[in-house]
Image (cartoon, rainbow, N blue to C red; front, top):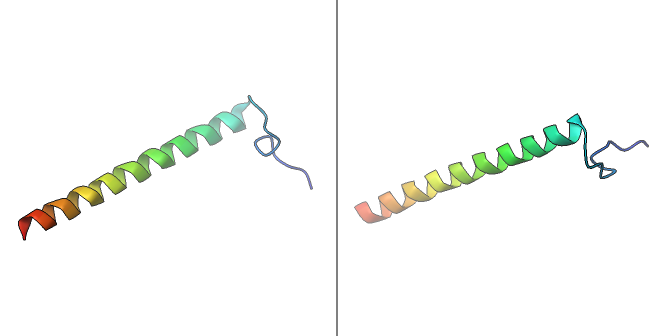
Length: 48
């Protein structure tokens, strides 16, 4: 098997930069969605 540059821990290159950007984007989206859900739960809890 041949591993990709990311698996072999390459520190530069377009694939590595793209993967880092993708991971950062997914983390940001996850945090925003969880924050929105938390805000919704708090609003519902205070309404009752």
